[in-house]
Image 1: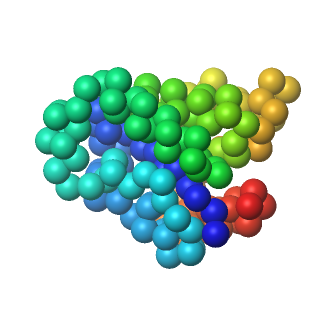
Image 2: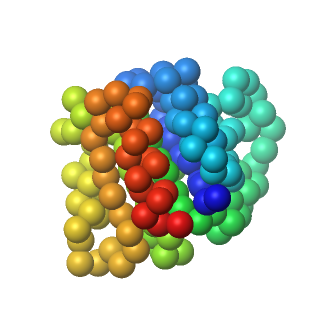
Length: 149
């Protein structure tokens, strides 16, 4: 079993993928028999809960989850500065990262972020994958976790 940090847009909004659609990704990871360090992003009422916390508390809590996790899986179809920071932190911690996004949105997703795959400066396993269906994404998640456990 692999411990996974799952990340997706929250404050950046759900302009491309709804919160309901994103909620399926943590469920896929658990269906594959893995543990999630974070699942809060897609929880109903999350904004009301997060509003009660300081920004430093949120950062430090999430960073501890990054440290505890074996790998990071991020759905990046919706733009998010926070997710970009978490991805960079995972790379800095030397942990494998998988970024998923809807294939139709390839040119809406940061070229800089996608360029980490294959970069001579990124020393940890890093993959970006454009998926067409949820089953396609599930297959890639399974393959990635098997390769990086």
